Image (cartoon, rainbow, N blue to C red):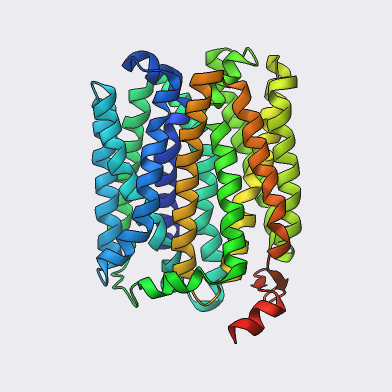
Length: 398
């Protein structure tokens, strides 16, 4: 069944990569389609908004539909959407295809986490969750760099064609490797409403919204920033983003054990380093060397963020993981969309430098939430720590 877990992880990787792929392609897309760079950022905003509502609405709408069938349909739709993107003759067609991308992202991500408990035995569930949601982190730190490099070699349309191929490959794997997965218990609206009264979860959701909006508000324009602020040549952007991704994976691995023991302190450390990188980039990242160094520091810090946020969310609602994950997916994707939309307006009005300082301010606001982070206690298996809400919260629930 671990091949099934890996298939779900690759599915999430393909979905999140699809959402963020335009980040490294904005200059070439905007030039060829005749729109401003800030306007081209809508290719990230639109799927983010749709994915946010899809992550809540689709699990409610499909009820007890077999989850393998649902995943297969979503992967097929992703392949069609990527093909339309690659063939788009104008910006309107491209934007319409991105609507379909948003539907698939939200639906796939919202149900993927709940499959871990059905694909592996109980003691292996924590490791299965790490592998499945590792697809999110891998896409965030590797999907965009690889897509950017493909775009440099084959053009931005070639990057979307490669995404079509990836979606079809994961679809084939899902049909072969996943068993039938009838829904055990569909997500209910009352379960979602109940989680909004969980103060520890809501603090984690607030931290997610601020950090993700701030990060993506700047990251969506990292390619033009590297060119215009740091003076990096177009051919070097892809390799630099790949270095960003590699440092992000290192940050993810380094933060994993720390986040399981102290998610609040871990997140606070991440916030300080990430905000420093964002503030300093417009000030000191004015040469290719200093710009590259600050980009790598940025990657190291952000790569550690998803595991810290996910540990917080799962620890705040251990008995309602699917409902909590649906809310988390909603806010995560909406934050990407709103961050991209706001930064697009800022970039078109004042240039790319100012968006970095606004992003840093949003990230620093996360420090106001960390005192609500759940405490932790070791499980019987020391490799799979159990995250526990504060005592006063457990008492309130009882």
